[in-house]
Image 1 (cartoon, rainbow, N blue to C red):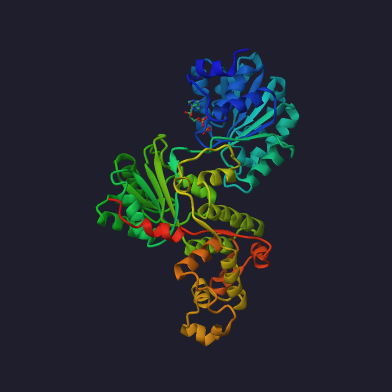
Image 2: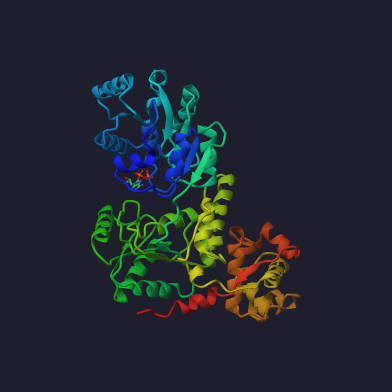
Length: 517
Ligand code: ADP
C-alpha cells in the first residue's frame, strides 16, 4: 500500500503535513472513529481524502457546501482519483453516472449533500456498493445550538449504524457544547478519538491593555504601524466613524464600515480595503466575513469582543500570509458591564445565557492573564503543546501582588452597602473620601470607610476591574449596574482562598500612550 506521505507529495504535491494532519490520517486509517477539530484553512479535506485513497471500498463524504464539493471532486479527478458528487445541482445524467461508477467500483470518494440521505433508496444503495468509511465535513451542522443547524445531518447517525463502518467528523467549531452534541448525534454518545490541532497562529503577536484614554491608545498603536493595513474593531457604529476621523486627523488613512451603511458603500469600503495598501478600516464585527486579504498586518480591538471565540476569529484575520502581525485588545469595566447586560437582556434560554457568561469569562480570564496569553488562549480550545514568545506577557511578565486583602476590603464595602453601588462610590468609601453622596447615605460611618488608603484611586479601579474579570463581582442590570458579589467570591471572603492580581495594568496602559512615531 502506498504510504500517506507518498500520496501527499505524488497526488497533492505537498512536501509535508500540516500540524495534526498526519495523526488524524493515521487514526482514520486504523479504522478509529475520529472527531477532528481544526481551524478553517487548516487542511481538513486531506485528512479524509488520503485515508479514502488508501483503503478498499468507497468513502462517503457528507458536506453541506455544494460549491466546495464540486471543487474537491474536480481537483481529485484531475489528480486521477475516482470521485463523484450527489447533490441537488446534479443533472439526472450526472447522478446516473455517479451510481454507475459506484456499482463498477471506480469511485473512491462519494460526496453527498445531507438531504440526499432522505431520498428513498439511498441507504440501501450505499449498503450495496461497499462503503468503508463515512467522513462528515462541517460536523457542527448537527448541533441545534449553532447557527448552521441542518436537520438532515441528524440522519448521519442512522447511516453509520446501517453501514456499520467507522466515521470521521470534521469541524472548525471548538466549543465544548458543540463537541458534546456531535458525539451524541453522530457517534451515539461513544467518545471518538478526538483531535484538536492547528489553532495556534504563531505569527500573530497577542496583547491586551486596560483602557486608559482609549482613543489615544489606538492612535498610538496605529501610528506606530503607519503604512500597514489594519482593522480596528469597535463596539458601536458611531465609534467606527469617530475613530476613522481621528485617525485621518492624525495623518493616517482610515475608513469606517458598519452594518448601518448602504450596501453599495459597504461594498466600496471592502473593495478599497482589499485593494489599497496601508489603509485602516474602523469597523464593527459586520466587517470581515467576506474579506480575504492576506497581508493585514494588525488588528486592534477598541472595545472588548463578546467572547473568546469571537476574539480568536477577529484577531485571526491578521497575518494570513504567515508574516508577523500584531494585535492589541483594549478592555475596561464598561466593556464588561456592556457584554454582561447584552447576555442578560438577550432572549436566549437560561442555560444558553450561562454558557455565554462562561465564554465571556474565558475572554476576561485572558485579558487578566498573569502568564503567557497564547497558552491561556489555546488551553481554552484544548490545545496544550504550545510554545509562545510572541505575546505581551512573554515580552515582559506581569508584575503581580497578593490581592487577597484588597479584594476582601472591596467585598466588604460592597456587602456593607448591601450591593447597591458602583465602583466609583465604593472606592470613595475605601479611600475615605467625604463626598456629598457619602455624607447623605451616612457611609462615612461604615467600618470600611477609609480602610483602603494604601492604594490610589487608579489602583482601586484596577482591582475592581480585575474582580469583574475574575467574575467575583457582576454589575446587576436591575440595580442600575450596581456591583454584586458572585458565589465565586465566597472562598476569598471567608479567607479560604487567595487571589493574585496584576499590579501593572494601569501603569502599562499609561506607558502605552506615548506616541511611537
Ligand atoms: P479546511 O477544510 O480545513 O478549511 P482545506 O482542506 O480546504 O481546509 O485546506 C486549505 C488549503 O490548505 C487548501 O488549499 C489545501 O490544498 C492546503 N493544504 C492542505 N494541506 C496542506 C499541506 N500539508 N501542505 C500544503 N498545503 C496544504
